[in-house]
Amino acid sequence: MQRVFDCSDNSQLLTGMRQAKLAVGRGELIVLPTDTVYGIGADAFNPKAVQALLDAKGRGRATPPPVLIGSISTLEALATDVPEVATQLAEKFWPGPLTLVLHAQPSLTWDLGETKGTVGLRIPDSQEAIALLQETGPMAVSSANLHGQPSATNAQQAFDYFGERVPVYLDAGEASVGVASTILDLTDAENKRIRVLRQGALELEEIQTFAQDFEFESES
Image 1 (cartoon, rainbow, N blue to C red):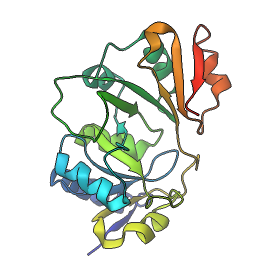
Image 2 (image 1 turned 30 degrees about the vertical axis):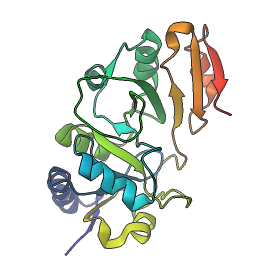
Image 3 (image 1 turned 90 degrees about the vertical axis):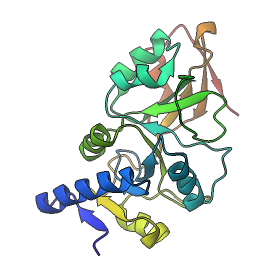
Image 4 (image 1 turned 90 degrees about the horizontal axis):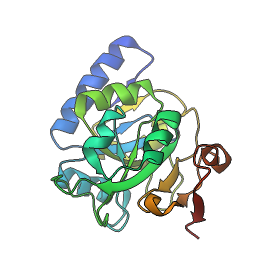
């Protein structure tokens, strides 16, 4: 049974995308390309699938996965009290290597782990990922690696980590960025504070140009 689908081959791309959509719908895991690193993903609204994702990586609920979305309009559906700076940063840097942590809509029926009422959102700069997300809806996606190991930057590395535990791998070649996304916590934006949870591929200097009135605090 084929598990790895070459996205540079139109026939394999179509088959792989279809199989990935079906797998997500069944509550299974998939590996998908993003601009930063490869991700292991599951239906964000399926608690058992999200738990399977955490189990596959060897991570606990204290480290909830971010959620990838296919369009900026989805941000308002998943987050509440969205500050203007979040919209500005999303419009400037999405699709791209920036994850925004916001207050989650309290009405959402999902369980991503110990989120403390927040959700990390991102649109990856990958046409394969965006096309899939527009079919499946929001997906919980974490870097494709075992806990404590380097993130996979290609499908083969991801397969070496997870093997047959994941039924579908979408192979779009080497990740173009190869470094994880920068994560900003905007839940205190009303007080003009932005917490930098992770310095990743997007440099803070670029971000600060669009948030000049904010104080940036490092998680350290």
